[in-house]
Amino acid sequence: MTINEPDVLRIRDVGWDCVESLLQPAGLSVVRVEDGQPIPGSHWGDEEAGLIGHSLYVRSDTPVHSALHESGHWLLMSEQRRDALHTDAKGTAVEEMAVCYLQVLMGDLVPNMGWQRMCRDMDSWGYSFRLGSTLEWLRADADDALACLTQKLSHAHGVPGLDVTAPYSRIFQQHDDGGAHVEAAHLGASGQFDS
Image (cartoon, rainbow, N blue to C red; front, top):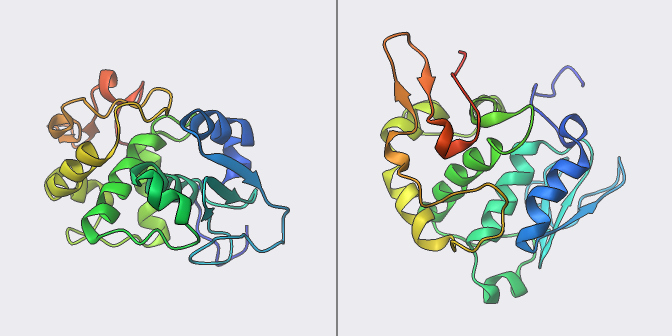
């Protein structure tokens, strides 16, 4: 990690197999790009993930949040949009927020990450929400994103362990001890948000 590089989980930290086993059953191929090489289809460049058609391009230094964000775009697209996809997902503002919500849910399916770390990594990277943090956005301002997500994401999406039919309105709750808790039945085995 360089001095200017944010402390976020990267593909090298969770392993290629983890990312491939999460996304390939849905029909999204994970293409490994050699270290130091440009990532095809990357909207932001540098180490950010890229999308072309039915393929997600990542390097070992690609942040997990970037890989899951781009794959979230792909999951919410129609087949027609997927077939024409190259670099820019061309989604609406509310779809962009639905993708952010989805990447948090998928982050909970990544061993050694969980939804809490995904929220922290999104904040560290500079994702911007009106309420200041990803967690506060999820708690109080993400209803439109959730509505879009549940409308657009097919229940036959193919991502192992991802349940988009759960009643998410109660997932991120503030408790007397100051921690955010998630019901394990909805988001895997995560426990408490350790701030």
